[in-house]
Length: 286
Image 1: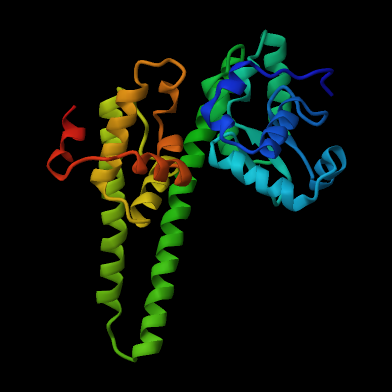
Image 2 (image 1 turned 180 degrees about the horizontal axis):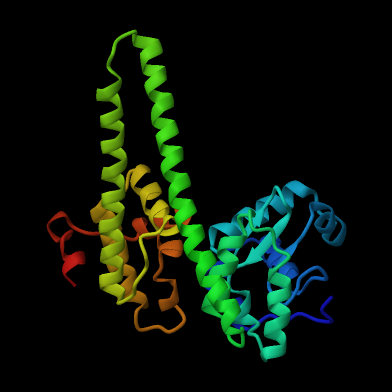
């Protein structure tokens, strides 16, 4: 058990944190400094620990966990009770090779089938100073494996959903119209993904970054398009926030899919777009 935990001053300056309720802020502080945390920032935290330490009802804890998840602060696995703080090692960097060995030992006890495993690996590869080369190579291999398995699972899930819809169509109509229905559904899915990729490419172009077209980024954009936003709306939000934040060291880090296409924040940013009809395209050209 650690003797103490630390919180950087930038925690209080973070715009995402500032918008949280006091209860969600308290949970974040508890996770960063509490008695069950460790120097990896990934640990098992059963509901009973939280209710005992904070004197909360579990429904309050779950609500705050959801809020912290929405701002990309953490991933919580409710099935196994594990939690991973995404940028823990950025705020609490590994100090020396000896700590690096300790980090590896803590990593080895994290359940590989938990949803915290992927963000944990990403965090280690991003902030993995003083980690041994053999361990880093292992992490890169695991990351590639997880991406491949994730893509296969998504494809299998979509195929199963398509088949279920096909079977339902047959049962209700009694006609051999499965092929037409299946093709239409696949076309719709492909169209949404194509639009999301266009938006992500525009974000990289405007910010000079290289966000990859992986599930974590694409699904956020697709969700906003499904809710009624157009590709133009998404581009306008990106362009506006780039102009506002690009020269600000603190704010420029939020020019990312997790912030721009967060459900609540995106609607706020959309509300800021007061543009005459004949000037709508100007957002893309600035």
